[in-house]
Structures are given as structure tokens and as C-alpha cells.
Image 1 (cartoon, rainbow, N blue to C red):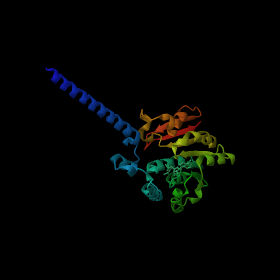
Image 2: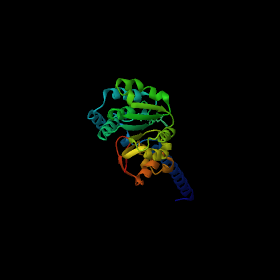
Image 3: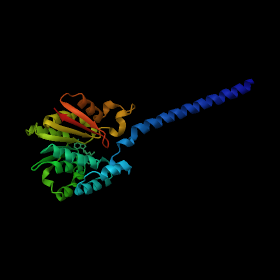
Image 4: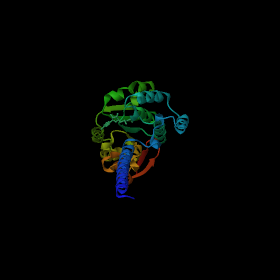
Length: 259
Ligand SMILES: C[S@@+](CC[C@H](N)C(=O)[O-])C[C@H]1O[C@@H](n2cnc3c(N)ncnc32)[C@H](O)[C@@H]1O
């Protein structure tokens, strides 16, 4: 091969390597955004797609007809993706009934599907204290609570959840709640652990939605230290005052039982 030919080969080789390098960089960037922004399909909520398993799950779940209407309205809102999965709602109704629960806490109400599900499961005279910072959202739920005959079972408090929980403790309600459900903005989750623990009765349940964070729990590129859900998952797992189970339903529910 002549000197000139070697130069051409070397030039083409370098260009290919550069292109491959750039391609790989773009691939990595693509991977990063795919991992950071997209949720794993296995964590979808049943209402997000017509996956046959999802349809089967819904078809084999008892759904209160008024809750079904509220859920439809809630999911049609521009921020409707915040709505809980309806089979989880029924699960919470059944859990609450099985516990013979009288007192529940719902942190982060949005349109109130979960609050309604909890209220439907409470025994006579029972009450759900719902904490929500945005009154506009929960106004949508009120006519449905009335239609289902459970308005007197849902005590809506428009305030920051941390403030609401500490007021409940000051009001002498420590150790009296059977179940607390958490589904607010996840940054503050770790700070809810102690007040919820205080408010729960022995054997009480602390239930946390979106425990899998769309699959980010297994994404090595996500900084786990800044996400409140990862932090509270770990805190609960390592807290001998609770026994825990993380259920792979929708985006995951962590259930921690106060020992
Ligand atoms: C994911 S949505 C809850 C969905 C709801 N559980 C349902 O049944 O569909 C989160 C809600 O938490 C509320 N929220 C966020 N941070 C809060 C806080 N610090 N205190 C009270 N509510 C909060 C938001 O306004 C929003 O309505």
C-alpha cells in the first residue's frame, strides 16, 4: 500500500471511530433520558393502556359505581395521571373493611378517589381525615362523596400534610388511626414517617403509593438520595418498629405494619 493509501485508510478509520464515538455518546444520552424520563411499562396503572392483563384485572375487581364515575372524572383532568389505580382503591376498601378500621388518614387527596375508597371500607361512625394543599382538586370529589352517602365520613383539611399531621398529634390523637395512606409530592415523604408512626395504633398500617417510581428504583443513573420515595422505602425496610411488604401492583404499594 502506498503512503497516500495509508493516509486515506487512517483518515477513514479515524472518522469512523469519531462517528462511532459520537453515536455511542448519543446512545448513552438516549439511554439516560429513556431511563430518567420514561416509566417501565410494568409499573403502568391499569387505566393507562389497554393491556389485556389490565382489562382482565379491572373486569375481575368489584368497583363501586360512584367511585367509578369519580375516577373517570379524575383521570380526565390535565393532571389526571396523578389519580390512583382503581383496583388499588378497591384493595384499600377491602383492607380497611378487614381491619374493621374506624379511623384513616389520606395524605394527598387530588379528586378524592382514595379517600372515597377508604371511607367505603370504614365501619359505622368511622372517619377519613384527608390532607390536601390544593382545594380546587378536592372540590371535584365532594358531589360524588354526597352521592355515595359518605360525605360525613370524609373530613377534608386544606393544608400542608406535615402541618395537618402535627395538629392531629397536638389534638391528642396519637395511637388512634388504623391506616394512613400516603400519595403526595414525594420530596417530603421521609418527614411523614415519625408523625404517621405516632398517629397509628399498634398493628396500624402505613401504605405508600408509587413505591416503584415508574421503575426508577432499579435505574443506576437515578440519584436515590434525592427521591423521597426511595428514602422512605429504605427507612421503613430498616425500621424494626415496622414489618413491610412491597407489592408490585400498578406503580407499587409499600405496606408497613406498625408492630
Ligand atoms: C398523586 S396526587 C394524589 C392522588 C389521590 N391519592 C387519588 O386518590 O387519586 C397528589 C396530591 O397531593 C397533593 N399534595 C402534594 N403535596 C402536598 C402536601 N405537602 N400536603 C398536602 N397535599 C399535598 C397534591 O395537591 C395532589 O392533589
